[in-house]
Length: 444
Image 1 (cartoon, rainbow, N blue to C red):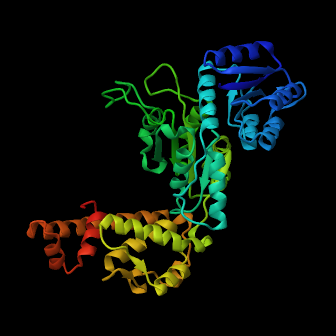
Image 2: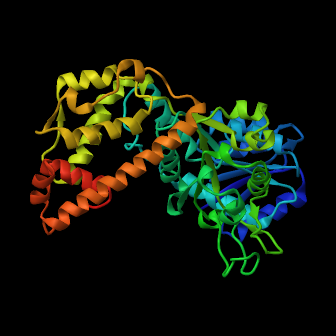
Image 3: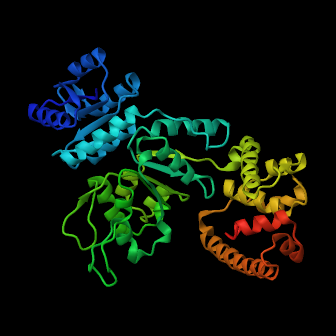
């Protein structure tokens, strides 16, 4: 039987909550103060706790901390006075599952309770896709296991290429929202004039070119998770609208006269120093505090070098499986070279290095010369946030070179009637090298 503990000193509020949850087949026990609530907790277990923030004999934030110490598996949601966002954020930092504003919106209440009960019933899974056994990675795995049972916004920080999106996916996949969609969006890749439509949707005829109704990213992530990557790239006008959507849990499509409720968990990330951007006035302080409730830092690869052998084993296994060839291995000298390299591009760079080496090695063993690592003097420099323009220029060059390589490969394949062995011989490549290049360019 699903059950809830309701704590509020106002009889009308207790009755409203009890009636609403009763319609959801949730049995309720009510307490007017914390003393009574603690006595009920000793008598029986509950699937969720709903508590007011101001009670005759204590404070809701302190009670959240008490529950975390004594009943860590009990989801607790706090009910705050309208506009008391700072208090709600304090409660989330202490471990609250979520919060509700007064006057209580019954639709939001039902959604919150369903999410919390599902979280309580969800068995926390292990996180095997996060490769590594270093102390920092074990710490991240433990934190992910805790975060997946909450609805608090999480800000994932770390350099480019460390795997921030993977960590966000883990938080989604291991929690009660796994049945919903995980919707990632790169905030820096959306043109400013299209942002509001992309996030909130629009109605037919609301502007030139709006030929039909369109749902936005919030509606697409309904019941799931919306991951805002590079959130620091949002313009100020969009930051205001995003803040309102997060706080009110409602969005209004362009051209619509009314708001619609949304049930979405927000995860965000950036490789930039968000606090510094707040001080510089680029990022709004109120948005910062709303998305930065809990921070999870993903360390660079150079700070977890002991994980490199496991990562290499995993990546080479995936590459070998994708090609259908014998499993590739690394020579001892090649492994030493990787362990001595600083990897400014982190795991993404390691993947690229190994994929390139797999195409170049003549046999099943990768040697140091196949890795083609940059000079130590070059690799020691960690890219700064100001290198974005250079990175964009490099990306455009890579795209151009990819187009050239794709054209050459297609010409060779057409001339040999798509006989890969003959095409490889014509191009002076090994069959393995040709297969990897085809896969990399999406021609596999």
